[in-house]
Length: 602
Image (cartoon, rainbow, N blue to C red; front, side, top):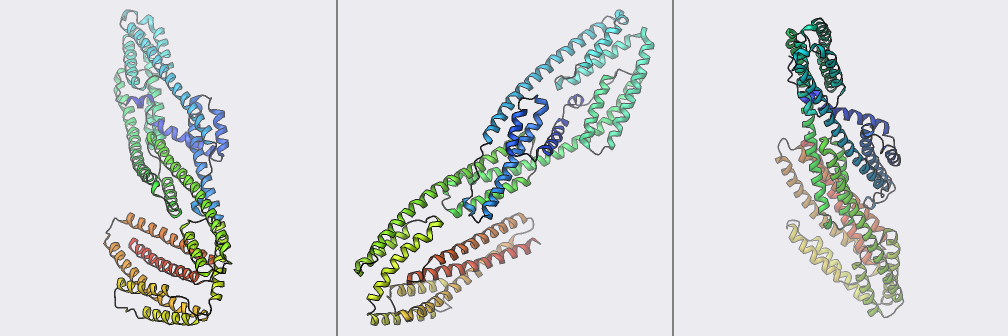
């Protein structure tokens, strides 16, 4: 009697190859459907959703994956068009997907039909098992009546044919069924002495067939495709089961030869899937980490309350999506679950972003109405000659203007110019009316020249905090001094600005020098194996560089909005210039830091 020690799943042909076989089918379907649009995918789903489950189940999964792949590509394309059009990144909101709900309904219907199909398949397997057991019981009853064995030869042949014709049974029962069938069959032939010639002929024929199977199994060791070799081995095992016994003295030798060849293929197959399982485990861990990272961002969205903050979070989310694409498949059990978890967090983020911008737009409109109301008030006062009360009223309006938040960019210049022109007109008329105060203006000129000398005299040896305090005191004095002669105003202000710029440059240079020293020490302290930290720090610095670059563009735009007809506007322009200069110096510091990291990474 031949003995088997193969895994029952391997003998049934329904073990691990199933997973690889499904993967091959999915890849073929992806190639066929990769050019479909989302609408075509949904339409294809409608066509096949009621088709036989075993014929379309792989295509359904492929269509689902391609749908979301196309959707991601469309969102990325729309985002690129949005950016190429010169629109702010923070204003980008993906278009609502009207096709996703019909797709989910079709998938749900197919899932229900698939569950029913699997239940029916399991019932059929149980029925087949009962039929095979009944045939084995009948064969056992024939063996138990040795005197009737010769007469039952034809019936035994029929039982063998019927037993082989029943193919699909529960996997856990395959090995026991085959062992029992082989035992009963061999016992029958052992008892069939009166038909020795027929038995010997069957033995010879079976020997030739099984030797051919042994040779085929041994040749599979040379097949490079491990999965293909394993599948072919399962086919050989199925053929082996269908072949009857050989002569008793050859059975163990022949079976051991076939089993040894099978063991080589099984070990290669097991090693292949263990390696793939390890990779899938690593991918799963990476995907779980990404899910947790994005979930932390989504959980903290209540704290995001500015355009820049939303833009920073958006860039982080988009970067995570790119990282997700670089990670391979996780286990079949968890890959889809993890993708749904990640996608839900992305959807939640962009939904919250859309809601924020909707409310922000409402706030911009409200601010516009308030500023238009202030324009009307300023215009009603601009022709007044009550210099004191009107000045107080306009100053109050200007303070109120500052307290109102921003408006939409397309209205910002218009409404500001309208308000500013009304204010400037009044103050110009006031200046002309009060031009007789030359003596006061000359005294103011002397006082401001003295302030400039104080600023220039701040000792470079004193620490920055002391120097800042001295500078603030001088600036406060300057701001409290009234008008100077008009012809001296520009020259005086340039001297004042030059003195301030020198101090600001000194403070920023000292600060950047200190920051660079601290950063250099931190980088130098990092030992081997910290490449990931260095790369993350470099990406952080690169994002900071782009943000400062954008801030400079915003300040440059704002400079164009300001009228230079008043000293207050000049002061604002000077402040913007100072900020722009500081941002350029900060960007130079960032470049130095990136260069230091690049040297460390070499």
